[in-house]
Image (cartoon, rainbow, N blue to C red; front, side, top):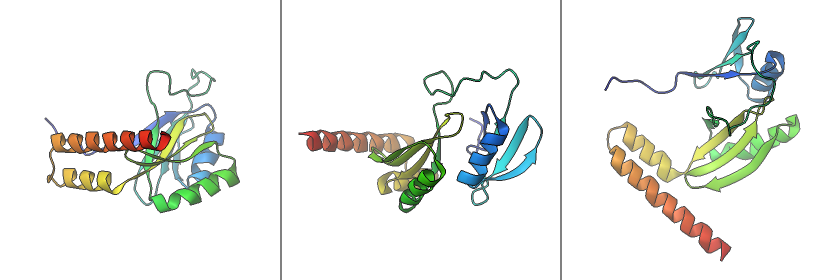
Amino acid sequence: MPYFGGVDHASLAVTDLDRSHHFYTQVLGLVMLMDLGHARLYLHEKTGFILGLHQHEECASRPFSELNTGLDHISFAVNKEDMAGWEERFDDMGVIYTPLREMEFGAHLNFRDPDNIALEFFAADEAVAGARRALAAGELSTEAFAGLAREQMAGFESDAKGAKG
């Protein structure tokens, strides 16, 4: 199979470029690289991740819903220690979010942009982070990685049932 090296960039359709510009620069700290009129390109300086925002004339003005076919959400990797700071920032800037949740594979902080696009900060727990590193280094097979994920999921479900009972 031919190789590809991961996600290069993401592009989102938005209803108002100026409103989205404010969110992605002021809340998330991205830097605008260029304004093409109908689209703008942004950079996350520490990772090199590029995000495109596009305003299409034909774009429906109804808000995003992950319940439609297509994108469910975009997740950004963060350190768990930074999650509380992000919650404070979201409170200060009026961002809609779900408080930090510990789930099967790590900590999740879900939030919405001005078009209601579902975004997430995710901090993988050490088991997942270690397995990802081993997989990337060729020290773990895809099957073994999937097996570890299933084991972790079963352990999380068992812990959740015990907490309820």
